[in-house]
Image 1 (cartoon, one colour):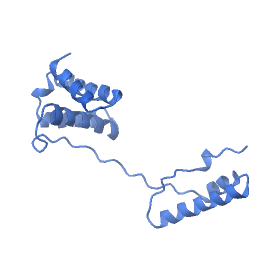
Image 2 (spheres, rainbow, N blue to C red):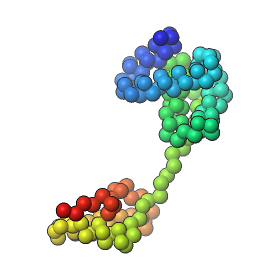
Image 3 (cartoon, helix red, strand yellow):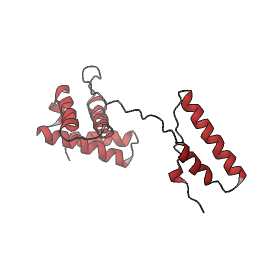
Image 4 (cartoon, rainbow, N blue to C red):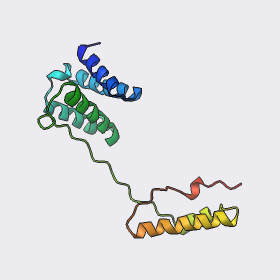
Length: 153
């Protein structure tokens, strides 16, 4: 194990990072080093940004994966190596905002047909009405209920 890898692992452990986070961050830095065939300590911010572009353009990784690499690099350069965040910027990709899912009349009918008693029917009706009202007011539907999740007994 290289001294830099050991320093990074020690910093991750000291900060109480989960074992899977430790593995992911170490693997991301290891791949960066292999890509340029030299120690990450010797790389410039431009080279790190070019590697992130490589992940997006050529490897076609999802935004979340690229962001995880970016977080690993921020941790390495900012926390472990103590470089200034302004001088060594590593951008993260913005997360896509999904539009709220609106149930069709048929889906609402299927959902309500799953209610086996009056109480369940009233609760589901209120949920459907409040979901549509929230959409009309511009709020997002985070409940994610759907007739597909309903099981009739």
